[in-house]
Amino acid sequence: MVQSLAAWRVAGAVERSRDGAIVIRGARKDIRIHPAPSDPMFRWTVTIDGRKRRAISLVAVLRQVREALDPRYAANRVRVALTALVPY
Amino acid sequence: MQADVIPISILTGFLGSGKTTILGHLLRQSGFSHTAVIINEFGEVGLDHELVEASEDSFIELKTGCLCCKIRTDLALTLQDMLQRRDAGKCSPFDRIVIETSGLADPAPILQTLMTDTSIAGRLVLGGVVTTVDTVTGVSTLQREDISQKQVAIADKIVLTKLDLNGPAQPALLRRLAELNAGAPVLSADRGKIDSQCLFSAGLYDPHARSLDVNSWLGEERHSHARHDADIQTYTLVRREPIRAVTLTLFLETLAEHCGADLLRLKGIVNVAESPDRLAVIHGVQHVFHAPVWLKRWPSNDRSSRIVFITRRVPQRWVEALFEAIAAEVADVSVGC
Image 1: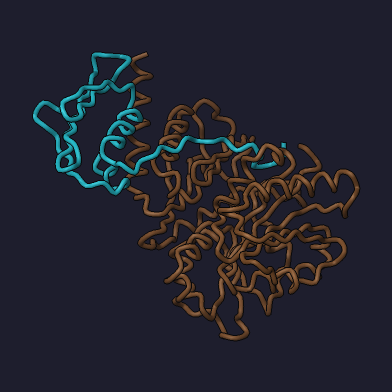
Image 2: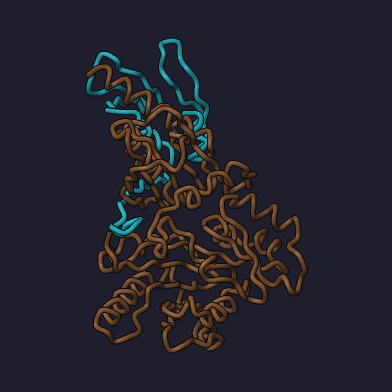
């Protein structure tokens, strides 16, 4: 998460709390990320300004955190090229 | 393999860096005779096409505006029209296309257009990106103009020009080029003269040999000696253990989602865990990725996965950490299943 904030050029400090949560401080919002190992479907809980949301994967966690912290964020979706890299 | 597929290459470089001079010489070479050329000019009155003496076997489309931002649709339509005319026998049967961009063009959106337009898909295969760099003003241009940095960073080959005016390239320029793109071989043009075969054999697929040159295309050995620019960085992610297909998919999807515009180019060969007997070749430009090409043979005994990144301010540590985190989660879920 430290590297993610740097990659997104977003301010904030990342700490580990005593209960094992990842806490992002000093950013636009207060964010806590808890692992949810007992839930096989939703592996993470992301709490943003007190509001809890479940996340199915690390990728989903990153998306939620980025949406909360980066007002300029507009997700690019992968597009698969139609032109072949080599001839068929 | 489809026989009648046409390689398309991009000749780019900043204003005045010698693109048109090189093109003029190329069009006089017999090896370049069956080449269709598109010249893109920026301005109300185009001049570059007047400077190129085209043989009858070449034809030139002139556009005003910039391919990368204003007339991408025109590019696809132009290519579609050229292919239809070729198929109908209404023009010379060209076997290669070269696009000379305007000096202010960003080559990445042009590559994306070539990769994703339905009207031309299946007929074209990406050749390579060739970028000209003026040895007289190159250092200052690269310092001043962001777009010139991107033109160099994304190149498969770099051509130094105007050596006749300036003598051998300055070490400062060569260092700068290595910082921006250590993977691209640096060639020299003698008053615009350069061998066309040498110049445009930059893609993964060599249409003349009808073979694949993965190592050369990847340029990984050269990238491994890369120095880093503050903005544009090249680095290689190496993993000795096979990578699960879902890990690779999630990794590429997350990269595209979070840093698509800054992911200038990505090239790699991947040992996919589910397909141990063959290797996957991957390629992406910003958020557009090719479907993997599966090859039956590895280029060497080294079975490690190597993915070369050319990025604008995407930290290598984040890429490494992201990959490890996704791989760990995928492994964890797999154990749970």
